[in-house]
Image (tube, rainbow, N blue to C red):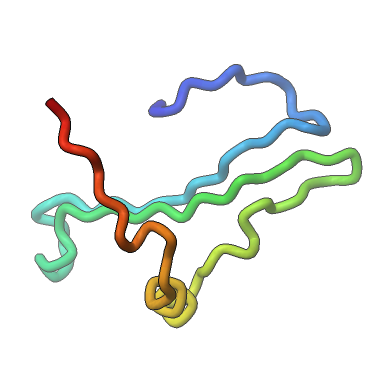
Length: 85
């Protein structure tokens, strides 16, 4: 368990994260270029009185959507962290 939660009953107003993932250790029976990587696709789900709402439904999912989002300029493009002393 990597995220310790309160583990309360699911009721309207509670948000949970659903995070399917794949982790490929070294020496797996696949092309070595995939070894030692992990990918998680997380969704934040709001429990409502009539079911649920996927709060992250608008996030890019396909390769084309992700590449398009990455190609857009961002207010953080020129952000530089201050030098820590």
